[in-house]
Length: 513
Image 1 (cartoon, rainbow, N blue to C red):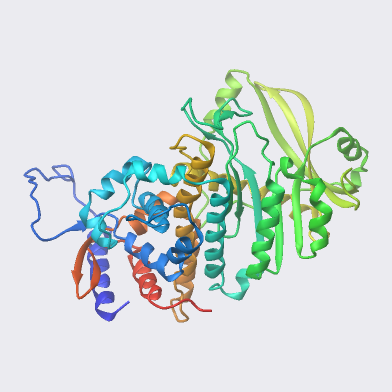
Image 2 (cartoon, rainbow, N blue to C red):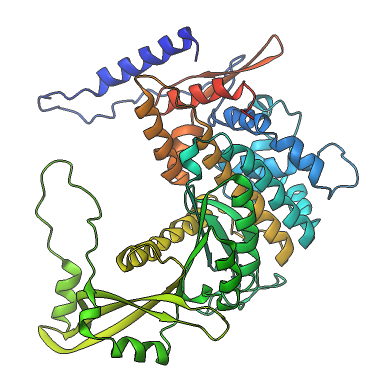
């Protein structure tokens, strides 16, 4: 950022820090909120928006070539009067970044003249027009839009340092997208009694980017279509230059018919859960006791100051008082053996996790119970303990599902059929990808502050969507037009403002080839 801007940011920061500095207050006679004589007025010339970060997102979209790629590769409109395909796609993504949760929120944005000026638009599609655009998609058009996003993803990944390409971890899982509607074509009842759709999400665990989204009726099995998406994800990561690729999934994704083909690729490893079938349990039971090793799980986090006393477990007390049946984990052991699934022509390594449980009722221990969890892999280098811990890390994808549902609201199913809701999912999920790309492209130049900048990039990648929107997007800004420029004049300060300003400065330069 420029020297003048940096000085203004520093002054705002010092002023805020002085105001929030710790003090020893004397007892106060009145509450902290003292405002009473409040009046409202309408500005005559000054105009501002609440989502001042939207300009940075649009600048980034231009820099990475997203707008041109959408218009060149997606053709669902016969004429452009007045909107192009990129206008519709970005309109849905920007609506979510600006704080919207549904198509109806577009009406507030299109009536906000300052928002339109900030994006250089005369007008934007209304909710009805946006819904009609979703209904124009067919299956091939939705897949084509995902291919466009993945081409842009390759350009963003190409800007990363060499260590970024050490290993790509690809995860797949299904999640229920419920709906209260009764007339939505393709909806069905899921395994848990929920009516709606059952989309498949294949993502890159390194950055939590959704690589592929496939909408399906609610009754379809979780693994349906996963092998094809895994193949496409492998091709995408190989094209990006990742040296190793890891596929992960739960027991529904064991995909034994495809394991030999993936194993032949050479740089592809897989760790899939596999159902605890009777023959696998029999093998595990027959293993000698010396084959088992106790599983030592690492601590969830390091205590930064001093350990605090753990509060009383109220839930545990209620379970004992009411004499509910309670399963208590006493220990975990791991072992391994060689196994060849029926659909395979090769032997693979199966790691088995044995959970030793005690079944209790009230204060009484009823009996001991053993449960087995099996993982099939072609990784013959990592220890059995590492295989189990890596497989357990896959559960973090549930957080991505939660962000796509509750953060981006990508699975609200606002239209009337499966394909149009699929198209909306893909376009709404672009808002999450834009967040990830912003974090990946945020500059971290060499110097005394590099470690701090790198930590900010990591924090942005891990940040929940709501937190990102409040920290980076919801920055009040005055919109000025001067000398063919659109100027976002920031009206307040927060700790993430410097990251935004550094990113905006870097977005003015072309991408590194």
